[in-house]
Image (cartoon, rainbow over all chains, first blue to last red; front, side):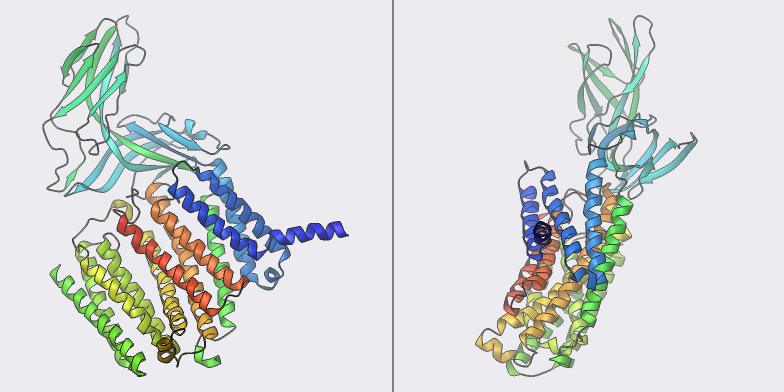
Length: 332
Length: 270
């Protein structure tokens, strides 16, 4: 009997409202710490979230106030659900970046990604094709609307085409692809091996434009060979005129400076560089678009929990305020 | 733009007249409430015309530049306060506490650059407007609570006790202040939810701990802490009033301080 009472006493202490106050303080301190100290991992916040969940659960099960006040109970249950959903979200989410050249298909590979340990990893099977896109600019190079045409196959293999952009992601298999400010120019090459093997076509993405307008150069390795290449895009025109409204587009007149094995070449579309083990042909310039991808199946449930929490809170406070008149003079 | 500036100046003059009248009224124990309301609502009307004029001219709401954030902030706080003033007669002398604060904020607004700015594509959504409206109501609730808390604190001083003798007792005022804090908490929560929906659509994440998100969350925690503390430890009206002041200071720093030190309200996210 005493053991049961002891356990219950311990559980009541876990649900103490004074502990809730301490947890509020701990939470705020840790949020400030994570914000100020770069080295501190965001996972530190799992501690107050977990403690809050325990405190909430204990309070709901032991504090009779929750049985008397429906709104309060609904609010706290929704908060508890929110904490659990956030935990599920952190375990299963994916957030990453990718870049695609106009005309190419996304092959499921991300340039950077972070994911929860239980993320299913289906992104490798997602495919969509980058079609032409436009990005408007206001005078002063203030970025405006982004309209990106894409094509994709659904689960039945049917091909779809649509326009995505600001506030309109492409959603495939739960993965949400968002356009970003990140975009630029991509020289397109064909590599023809000297032995007569199959030719390969591919592009390299120069640094983002106009963020790196004066650094349109890149060093890279020709796949399947040991050649290190240094590539620089030269153009004489202003693609995005700060003085007037404009659109991100390919330059009309451009040259590509290529340095391979100590040799320097100046290439225009169609030019080729003959090397001992093959020929490299510059096919021209394309645009590339940067995307972020986000996967989180808990989003609608998180929203539902938030809405229920607010409704519960509103109900509770409404009843609380209705119990006594607002007009101070009436009962003072 | 010149017309907008003229209208803004006219509104500020009307606000200053209302505030001055409020101070004079509590000092001399008068109740020029109709005149004060007339000045306050006239100021809001003129200010509202300035905001609408700019909105139509630039085709975006007052939430991009610091000038616009302050302008809509002053308008929102005073609009909410004017409603409370009209509805809850006993708290009317609190105008002498809160309106002078608006002098400072309106002065800051007039000192900022009123130049035009383009609305970033990520701001072009109804969810942003909803998010901001919830935020204004939340801040308005804390603002009214601040006025009431200010009276509780000023009554500790001899002149304050004299000036605010006609108001209800501290316990009743404390209760009223926390009703507005509850309202602020509900709308602060709604603001965070609407902001998360906007952020998900705009940047592909509902929460990223950017400076404004971080401080908005800390404000929510402190508001929750204040409401919880009141239920749990039942502090005295004076301590409760100090908590309201702390919440207002933090809310103010979040809503106006972070945008001031950032290039944009959600720095790095545009």
